[in-house]
Image 1 (cartoon, rainbow, N blue to C red):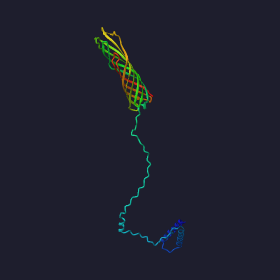
Image 2: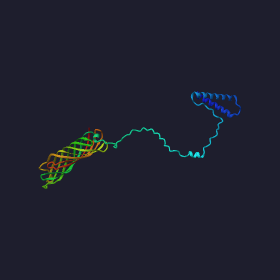
Image 3: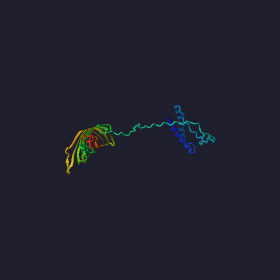
Image 4: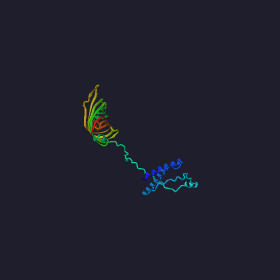
Length: 309
């Protein structure tokens, strides 16, 4: 009710002011009715204020001057411009914490290369074939004492091994065969002699080595081993007599014995699937002396394809 009365009173006052401002004529019947409405609104406002305990509506004094207020004096303006007492600044409102992503700790080692055992397995079995080249070996029998030159030969074998990380222990069984010859063999008696022969050996070697991975599939290896071998040497001696080469009357010289063997190996291995790999390597095989035949060295070029498990 109070809000309705205020709106009505404002509307009436606006109309009264409008009429009075636009005309200087005597008060008409319409003006009287507006004045009565204004009086009733004032009375209603008075009653409502008594009931609600609020201030009643007061009419604006139309005779009040609307002249602008005079500005303050220069002295007052200068005083107002003086700096006031130091006031501590209001604390800045705390910004809402932005939800940060969880902290992720990363190791300084970005990648750890798998070992040979992890990539290839614990065990392997590999057949091997290769070419054999022998260095010189000495032969001394009766009045004969000279060196035999090695020729091309071949080798075949099987290697089985156990891995620990990049280390490997292996067992190798192999057979080697190659030829020797000397067309001008020395004789103490001055005879003109030539000798041809061969050497074969069955070896059993135990050794160990280390593998260095180069890529995920390619690696290099090196190893050393030792064992025993059954070595057999043959020498076919011919003597130049009356413009012809005749067999030595003492017959063919053939000797065999159990000897000690040792080897050094190195090469490359390629893993072309999880269970199979290929090998290309070099092996230096040494054999101790066999009765009339001195110790010898063999150079083996080996190729192999093996299985991992």
